[in-house]
Image (cartoon, rainbow, N blue to C red; front, side):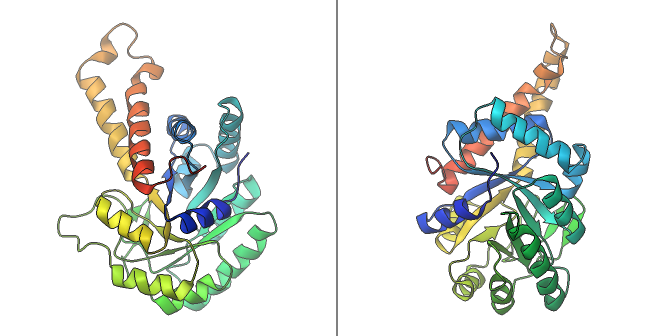
Length: 287
């Protein structure tokens, strides 16, 4: 059964580890992540962008697929199904469809409008036991058509949003969606420390988890980050494994063209990537 992300993230903050949000793009992605979480006794958050939700046939299709897998694969670890970078309208749709967690990204609005819209989402979501993530200071780069400038969040604005009663807060600290450029300055830990102090016990969210060095990840967790989002790294691993299979001509051998065989190396690559991240984040055996 799907659960809210609230309890798993509060436990993570207290235990000084982080829960991974791994974005899903299809059946293979979903199955790989769920099996890896179960095998490693780790809580997990399945992230769905609005674009990926549309690609997979709509939010109700995604909910049906995930719920079916939880039952058929005997998944017993805590699993949250979470809208990633949701618009106001998108947030309302996933709440209706049966998601257990939702992010409303109001970072591109004025702080006043961000507060107003976030309050409305909290009220609707809380009535159904659904956890809410909000954002202050846009995350850099592009993810599924959502482009952020990469601002450093204002700790005072973070406090205003946190005080509304959100369950987790994404704050820009120099992190970027996608692959990091060579001249990337790194995470701004002074800003993170100020945000952590301003927001109290609020679980903080680090978007753009692909390519951040391990020491930075660990320091971020020590400063209140309890949820780390990973998407690009799984996509790169899947693409590389699939390319290797095709370039070696294995799709031409026997029934290698069978999609179950063609997609298997990518599936295993995602499992490997997710396990590595769970080890780094410290969430193994924390279910």
